[in-house]
Image (cartoon, helix red, strand yellow):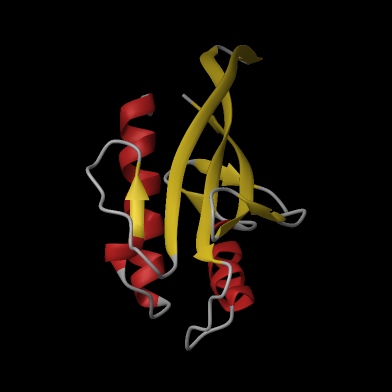
Length: 137
């Protein structure tokens, strides 16, 4: 059985490890439960888990509950961003981390596409990517 706290720890670790393996810095990730200093003029990633409903599932004699939710990721970048890697490279890396994966019992489905870019504050844009998941526990 996985608790919400265990699921959060496992999913954050998976994202951070996979992000670094893909060649990106762990220092640009903002997790909701950790202090973070936003960069003044470069890309940064905001990571959150949104737990949704849970319902009892009858499978034989097992007393399982299906938990649903989604990983919500915002990629923030300056309007005039001219980094070494295009924004789409960052988005492709994020999609590859979760699409059609099973991470510590959390099952992720197909990814439907990003929302954005959206203007957030003066001089900044963000693109949102969300990955629905479900797990039993």
